[in-house]
Image (cartoon, rainbow, N blue to C red; front, side, top):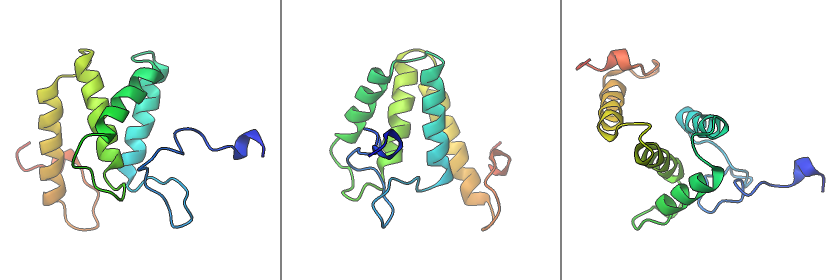
Length: 123
């Protein structure tokens, strides 16, 4: 097996969403964005990868998770948010307000159209 064929530890994570062939996948575009943002912030030195792994593990082991892994990237975003808040990089209330705004925008966006914050009727 070559280095390129060796699965990474991340790809072997329990609960990671998988394709019918068993390969790890991003279930939605926002999950790929969250992944890229996490890698970028780590590369910029905002946190060590071990700190990230610990934060994600904490979220993944909370009670109440679904068994099929569809909430894996919800846990990912929660872990990233918590890590950024705990380090004073982000404000929890701002994150919550943005989550609510995106939800309202999604609900107000016609089917098939891109979801944009401008679609939030309260913005």
